[in-house]
Amino acid sequence: MQSDYRPSRFQVLPPVIKNLIIINALIWLAQITIGKSGVPIEDLFALHYFKTDDYHVWQYFTYMFLHSSTPPTSPFHIIFNMFALWMFGSTLENFWGSKRFLIFYLICGVGAGLVQMAALHYDFSKIERAYLQQGVILSYEGFKQATLGASGAIMGIFAAYAYTFPNNTLIIFPIPIPIKAKWALIGLLALDVFGGISNDQSGVAHFAHVGGAVIGIIIVIIWNKRNRRTFY
Image (tube, rainbow, N blue to C red):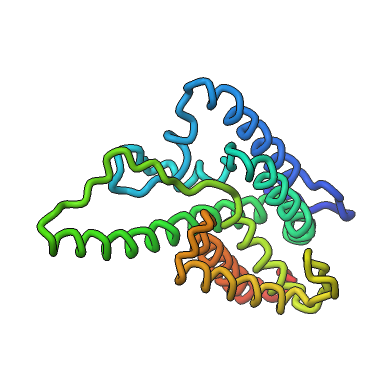
């Protein structure tokens, strides 16, 4: 039996994309219903800083299936992410096959979480040193800020799409003119790097986006070198 399904025709909604959208939607509905009634869904499954009491190692995997459940960003966070997942992911899943696409998606998501954690640790380490110079130990008790959302994995998908189809033209709101995928990727990465370095307080996990994109490109390059005749 063939282990990796490759469709004989282009599917508008291939199976992994469809199931990821369903899973994300169901989890978001749980967040805004039973999560708001006292079940600690986000405490358990969003990605918390590793020095807090709410941190668990499984959160590097689970955080990418949660989305903002707090107005005004809800439900726009999940709608935008699922639309981007479908828009760019469908092409890649049809192109690679479902098994390879799912592996790619999950690696990018976990990798994005690790990069975001490293960035948080760098920032908090500077704060801790400043407190220690004053003879105060920084406490994370009650610190609830967490990373959640599929954006890091989706940036990996977009990076792979832009690397594989660099000259495909896109219309990205609010830019009113077509732009090639490779330039769109560079522009988005530049914005995320700037936002992360400047600590713009937007609530966006900029370094998760950067990490997902970089990991995505690295994976595509490795896969292409190992399977040059059949990957593209």
